[in-house]
Length: 468
Image 1 (cartoon, one colour):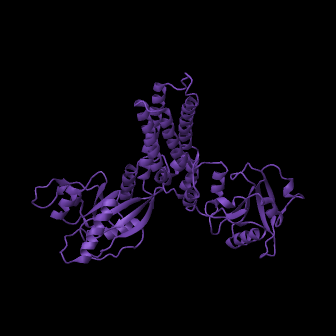
Image 2 (spheres, rainbow, N blue to C red):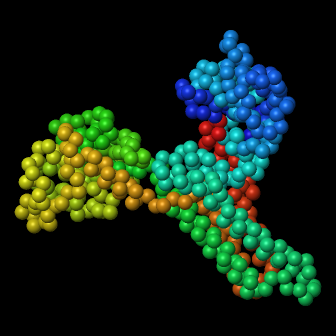
Image 3 (cartoon, helix red, strand yellow):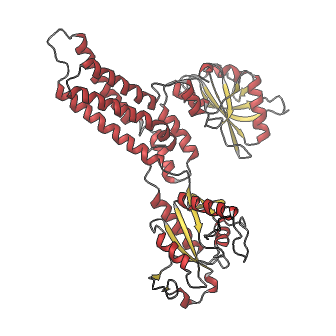
């Protein structure tokens, strides 16, 4: 896309589908000429008269529609736009057929359909934002939780760009002093003292280490939490799965072992979203039972990957020895013990009772009592899940896609700074120290986009939707 910067591009910038308003966006040097072929301002004027950003009411003549389409044109005639090129947004009726006809008309007037992320790519190439901010635009679009949205907005506002720019500036100044000393090597002039150089390198090392830590924590933030239902066969996992998902996804039967493969459903609650997973009942398998063995392996994998485990116990009976083992092996930091079938329990059954008849085990206190039939305890369970997921997710400071892309570059930058420090301590030549500093600067440049290749840009911006 980088070799087509001068072309005028157009795309639907609002969400597809019917709405009160649709927005079509254009950018490029020939935006005014393109619009002049089809847009008629309400007042007696032309777009050539517009010298400042302005909202202009008017009409668009569509080839496929007899009557003109009323609209408002938001027009940036100069380089003070998002893309630092002439840019326009046409705000009109939110009818999908009309929006499609408008796109076709503008393409016939000289524009072409934009590629995914091409508007943001042009903003990056024009210096309006760096790569970390461009990725933050995608982070805002893809955010599934408040913490992810806050991290993306902070990064878009320069929360990552500023410390990186400060670090690169400090290393550039240090490199300039070293190279000046190399130019005057025969003169008795010291441009930077050894102790000052060591202090500056130590400070840079600490700053990079802080950034790497941010990337490490952000890389582990799940796009959505995973909540796995685990328990023996026929304890009510599938019924609870259907109740929490508010749909009949899982087959429910009194026959044990109904669920073999695992099922998933997206569940939204209190502004958050998580993936609910119904797994096969925990049971021992015979050596030749290939299907049952595969089901147990899938169950174990889903349980291991989940941020929260709902350990389901049948509230109508005493614990079985296998359930005692499950309780003992559970990690209570991310396990919620759920007693099911509460509608079939008496109040006395809700009191602590021996865990396993005649086993001498400690008493069991369930975290939540639920009934998929009556709905009792479901809201309490939803709140408990949300609280566990909130505790499981670390505070995120960086968009996950940025963390995944930049961790290796930052680590290589840290290695180069450390190599420079060791050279200074061992009395190595300043020209070798300068080489390591240049390497560190190149790696930091890869993070912000000061150093990039077309392949990197294509990989980043191809994930955007068209119109962004």
